[in-house]
Length: 79
Image 1 (tube, rainbow, N blue to C red):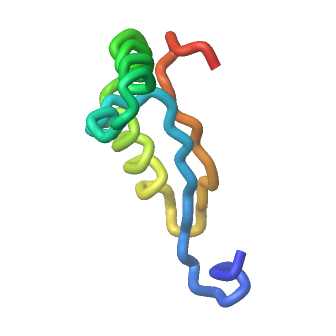
Image 2: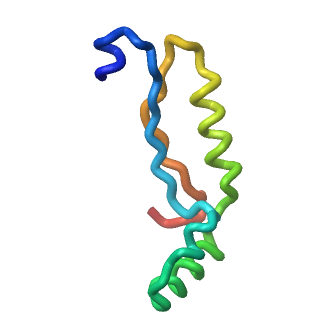
């Protein structure tokens, strides 16, 4: 909103990822949580390339277009 008010034409987008296979799982220190998350991601996790495709889509829009939000996740994951 501030960008639009100041006429800077800066585009922003928020990405809400679900089960995306990244190194984030390697940082979970609680054993029970890590076990549960690893099981979830093993069953439902998708490639980070999917998120990269979303980012590329947003960037490749014409300069006068802003896409504000994306929720990205595997089709097999219950939401």
